[in-house]
Structure formats: structure tokens, C-alpha cells
Amino acid sequence: MLIIQNQEIAHHQNEGIRSKWTFEELRKIPEFGALIAFLALFIFFAICAPRFFSLRNITSLLTIIAELGIMTVGISFLMIGGEIDLSVSSAYATAGFVFVTLANIFTFPLGSLLAFIVALLVSLLIGFVNSRVVLRGGIPSFIATLGMMMFLRGILLGITGGRSISYAGDSLVPSLLTGIMAYRFRPSHFWFIAIVVVFSFILNHTVFGNRVFATGGKKLAAYTMGVNVNQVKTACFMISSVLAGLSGVIAISRFSLANVSFGQGMELEAIAASVIGGTLMTGGYGSIIGAALGAGIMGMVRTGLVMAGVPSYWYNAFVGIILVIAAVVNLKLRSTILGE
Amino acid sequence: MNPKQPLVRMENIQKKFGKVRALKGVDFEVYDQEVVGLLGDNGAGKSTLIKILSGVYRPDGGTIYFQGEKVDINSPEEARKLGIETVHQDLSLIEKMSVARNFFLGKEPTKKIGPLEILDLKKMNRECMIGLKQIGIELRSPTEFVSTLSGGERQAIAIGRAAYFGARILILDEPLRNLSIREQRNTLNHIQEARNKGSSVIFITHNVHHVCPVADRIVLLENGEKLGEVKAGELTPEEIAECIATGQMIKVN
Image (cartoon, rainbow over all chains, first blue to last red; front, top):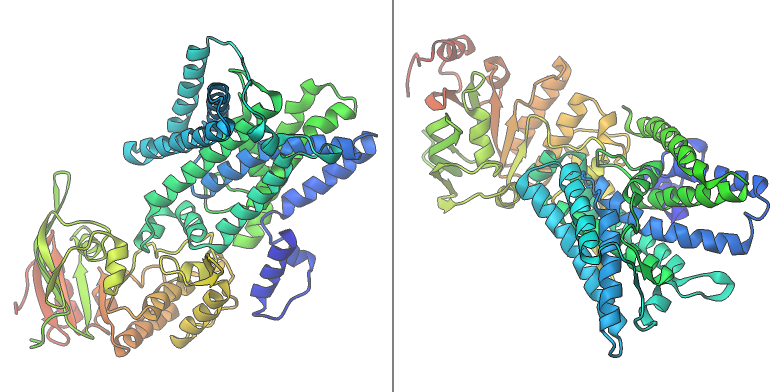
């Protein structure tokens, strides 16, 4: 994808005559910063942690990256559309709980598939409610989704009383989502890649994607040009929460256990991954491939530090530094493109 | 007076914002291929009136006729479908998007690849350059971000876009604001060009000297009411300015 996009930019700039892939051209792609950081960290850990660059580690790394990455793709889409969603971590846990609970009840054939579908519908509903509260209620999405995050987590705690639920349903959906394959690859790795490709395509090559950029970039201007901005935002909220829900079902399928504290704090990790990937928190600018790389960076730091012998307690400190550096570098890169 | 039926006629238009009556029953019409100056001091209701015509606001009272037929304009999308293109004061351009993506926003061309309907980016880039060239604007590249362009270039793109889509009515809200003298002259040329190609133009300004060189007719608004109107050449710019300053017409048609 990266290569395709790069070609395209080169193509646009010279009206059909392909320009050279110079550094100047390369750094104009929005995910350039994230790509360099990704490669740099990969090489760093491959040198510092002896077993880091092994197939076994890379596949287990992909498992973590895929789950965070799917959520990050969704939240990036919404951030480009000019809103934020803090409730993704709760949508993640809620979808997981709905899935486990229903799959345990639905003992008929394809029961887990039905449970999976209901879990995704519930996630879509969460996004829809978020969008109504923000657009009708007129309050900032930060507040609305903070409320949703606390509300859902509270409901889960209230219903379960803090007890975990083990998965006892059929193995269809868990194996389709995250069953172990050859070399410890899992289907979730490929779902993640497919989701990145599809949503990157939607963002850059469809009318809807064009309007997501416009709505996030300058809502009023988009509206005066005939864009139904509320519809665009509603769709973005729903994309954000359904991908969070999918990510939750995948994670819970992998652990075969739903726990109330599941995914707590993950919303901030997803936002961080998104920002590292070059997405502008204020909207109108960003990249899905960048979001995937951002999630990759987070995942690498998490396992890489442990493998390099650093206690895992240091994880947040490293992520914090990377996040701030990435935000500054991305700002510089962006200003060369936007001329600001 | 023009004997033909007006292209658009707004009758007894009223609009309130809270307790403020921004428009107190304004009549306003535009004829085919005419440049109408809509003139008034700050807060006279000029922008409110044209935002009703362009679908941004809904009126609290009054009727709009388009080519003799009563119409409801509920959104900018509906206004654009009627051929009403507006260049708002803040330009309706999105800085963080490319010129081509801005140019076609709301009316994006697509092509089919199998069952998928995708943006025709090649066509967008090509047509945007052609469309702008037609009104004498040369851009470096259609993929350039709007944020890299000057105020005059942005104004030209906004007008060029409206002209490209064959506007029946082109509404320009303070088009000369913040432009250099050369850019002002270019913009006035673009306005005349659009009129020559068949558009009617509504030119909103509070500066009488801006509108006099191009307007066929000038409508004066004052405090949400129509003060009167003058045809080109009936009054000098100084006399018109005097009307606005005193709130009284020297000679009422």
C-alpha cells in the first residue's frame, strides 16, 4: 500500500510523468514519520534483544499489534473526521462480554457466529448513540464518549459483580478470528491487514473518504459545499466503535475469558498509536497506514523492552517519550506539506 | 426595470436570531445575467440574506421563487442542485485538502471498478486544472494543499469552482476582502467573466467602491430592511455611500 500511495503522489505531482522518488517526495506522505520510527525501532530491538527478530516473536508481536491496530484504524478514521472516542475500550470489553455470554447460551450450530454478529451490532449501536449525543446534544465528543466509557464499564461491573466469564461456546468464531495457524500465525493478523487495506482505500479513494477529510478539516465549509456533515460523523463514530468491538471479540476469543477490566486504558493507547501514525487530533489530516504503523510501534515497544531485559514497568515511560517525539516530528513533516 | 421574469425572487424574507431580528421582511430579486451589488453596513443583514438563498439558514418567514416556481431550500446541497453556488467570506475551502479535492467537494466525480464506485482522482486533477485555466488561473499542481496558496489564489479557486459547475447564480460574500489591489482587479475580471458565460452574480460588500465598477444594479440594506435600489450610473459612489451613512435614499426608485 505504501508503495502504491507513493507512486500516486509522484504521479499527481507531475501530471503523469513519474517523478523521482527523492527524499523530498517521500517525506510528503503522511505516514513517513511513522515508517521511519517503525523501522528504526525494529532495527534497534533486533540488535538489543537477541530473540526479537525470530519468527516466533514476530508472530506473537503481530497478535498484539493486530488487536490494538484494528481499534486504532477505527479511532483514526473518527479523528480524521474531527471527533474523538474514549469509549472504544469499553466498546471493546462490552462486545467481548456480549460475545462470550451469548455464545455460551447459543448451543445450536453456528451459535458463536450469531453471538459474533450480535456483538458487532451492539458495538455499532454504541457508536450510533455516541454520535447522537454529540450531534444532537451538542457536547464535545471528548465528554460524550468519556461518559459512555464510564457508563459501559460500570454496567459490566454491575452485571457481573466483577466475576470473569469463561468461554464455553463453539470454536467456529474463535478459530476464524484468532485460531493458531502454521508458525503461530493467526487469522487476526490477516484480518488486521485486510482492514487496513480496506479502510485506507475508503479514506483515500471514495466520495465518503473525501467528505471525512472535509468534515474533519473544516466542518462549516464542508457543510456549505453540500456535505451532510452529521451523516459523515455518525458513520465515523460507528466505524470507530465497531472496529473496537471486533478487536474486543478477537482478544476475548484468544483468552477464552471475559474480564471486567478488559481493555482498560486501551483507548489512550489507540489514540497514541494514531497520533504516532501521523493523524491530527483536531481532524482533517491523517493516514490509516500510519495508524497501523503506530500500533506496530506500540506493540514493538511493549515486547521489545521486555525482551531487551527492561522490566515491563518501564513500558509507559517509553511510550510517553515516543508519543511526544512523534507528535513533534509529525508536526514538522506536516508543516512542510501544508506550508503552515 | 427589466421586463423579464426574475431568475430568483425572495419575498418578505424574515430571520430572527434569538431576539435579534436580522431580516425584517426583505424583498430581493435577481435577473438573468446580471451583477447585483448587495450593499450595506456591517450588521445590515446582507450575509444572512444570502445564507438563506444558499441554504445555510432557513428563513423564519417569506417565500423564495426560482424561475417563477416556489422552492424550499433546506440545505446547501439543495441550493447547489438549483445552480446556486456560493463563495462565503471564509471561502468554503478546506486548507488541509488538495486543490482538486476541494474543487470537487460535494460533487465528486466517480468511476466504476466492478461493483465499486471510487473517486476519479485523475479526472479531478485534470478537470480542476482545466476549469481554473478557463478563467485564467494557472496553478502549479492540483495536488497542492490549499494552505500553501495566497488569499487571491484561494479566492480565484473558489470563484473558478462555482463557474466550473455552471452556476446560474454565483453568490460572492465580500470577495475583495484581504486581497491586494492586483488580486482585487483579477477577481473583478473573474466576476465579469462568469456573468458573460451566463451566470447571474450577487456581490455582497460594505464598500461601495468595490461594487460600483461591475454592478448593473445595487440593492441597499439597512438594519434588516431594504433601503432601496439604484441602477448602474444613477448615483455616484459617493452619493450611494451617503445613503448608507445616513440611512436615507437620495432618490428612491
